[in-house]
Length: 535
Image (cartoon, rainbow, N blue to C red):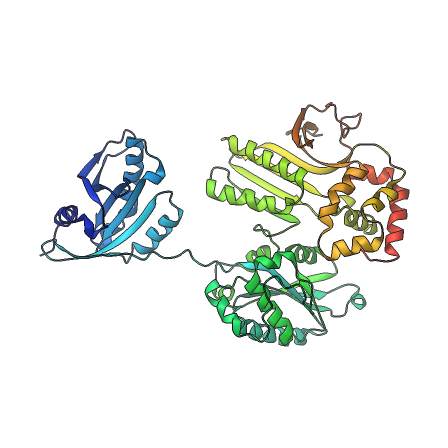
């Protein structure tokens, strides 16, 4: 004979201390009206010792346990509505004899739900008495083995040397608890005499489980957190958020990757390598979690290493639906990362995302951001690479929004000029970087972005957003957004009164600035090229 759920429920109602000390019964089979759906009955409604409402939902078989999540979420929502309670005033406890199918979904809901959710496993007698009622240890959040920003580029003279180097790297990485590596082969296809090794191996170290990080204490080389004195390479600031992974890279480099030379990489450097016509992407290499996953394609891993899931500091590309709130919150945060340190662009994009969020008709948003925060680099590459349009090296934003499958909004971001010619351009640049080596040092330490806003101000350049008219053969600017004195200014119409607009209603682009200062910029570039090479 098997006890009916009703008998177990009544027994627990009389012995609520088995579920939790301090619970007091409010009602058995508490009725919940529902004007928009089926009504419900809470098995046991109680209050805890702090006065919080507690929904106790009982399930005893494996099959019925699958209904628990549906019922507990419905009843908790109805109770909250009925009593006009805040989320933090309601708790839920699922009691079941079988947690085989219930543990994983309840663990997931408990992490993401706004209400406190707990589980209890009970053992019962045939007559419905409860022998034991033990708390269920819910599963922790799955560890995400995503690639970190700890990247290394190794150069080899032969493909065979690269293969041997990878084997060595994998062995050293395992010693450092870095079981998850993803690597990409690159082969030099042009100007091969200009590099030391024509066969590159670019690899990223995946996240190291914190439970394994302590095992690194036995390594032969364990740098202290924040160590700056590294004989192999400068420690990028981003590595301080990846201490265990940095230690692993240090161990690998000390142990020797058999490369003729190595360099530090980062998501933006990887993206640049992918676009470099002198290098050709070859096969991917995987270890650990990446090797056993059929769901992760080489393209997925390539995008992850390039920072297209939010780690990039310069380039971001992605899409999301504003109605899917959790993903939308993450998406807007990821898109903001390349704008860190750029006050104007950050404020403009925050405002743009707020407008899109408020428009319930928008269902799809796609954003592409390129934000090098280095005007001098833009001028170098834009003028020294005649084979590619200058615009490819300039900061840009393209933000598109759709609703019901139709384009609703097209917003672009650019670096614009106030139209004023500055004959003392070189002198103004020297106010920020007195000598070429000053710039080289800032560039080496990834600190140019700190000085870039001042340089732009001295040269009359400014970041703006502007909406483009849709559905016309010759789109025109319909709205200009700019940050003036820490306040967002919105100017409507193509004939808006702005120093950044030409008389014909077009914006003064950075290409107009370069054209107006062609001689001064060339003088400046010639001076810098005597001492440094463009990065």
